[in-house]
Image 1 (cartoon, rainbow, N blue to C red):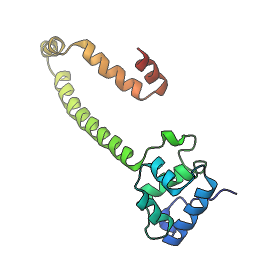
Image 2 (image 1 turned 90 degrees about the vertical axis):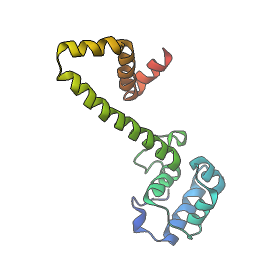
Image 3 (image 1 turned 180 degrees about the vertical axis):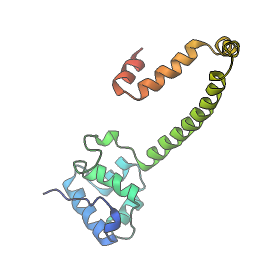
Length: 156
């Protein structure tokens, strides 16, 4: 029987976390705590502290441990370990999303300026900003929201 991971780490104490992790590691394809730490891209000492009940993982780390050690109970089941982001990779991706979001907010304000302007003002936009550059950005955004489209987009 597979080890069950509670959804919330807050329902456990350090000893319970360590017990679940040790049992799940034995049932997993990872040979050691070091292998798991490498796969998750987290420091080995940090992981050892969880396994030995010396430290409590955050909820975010608990969710990551669940995805690696019990993917069938994870909300991201179906993802292979290679597709699971480490805490650092998740943070980096969120950083880039924040930057894109800020750029989109600025772009929205600028586009609304042209939307509410005279046609002759929009002609300045068309003259100064090549349509192919706009098309590239729009197409890339669309592809990023559809993995199949992205694969085609990368091919060409």
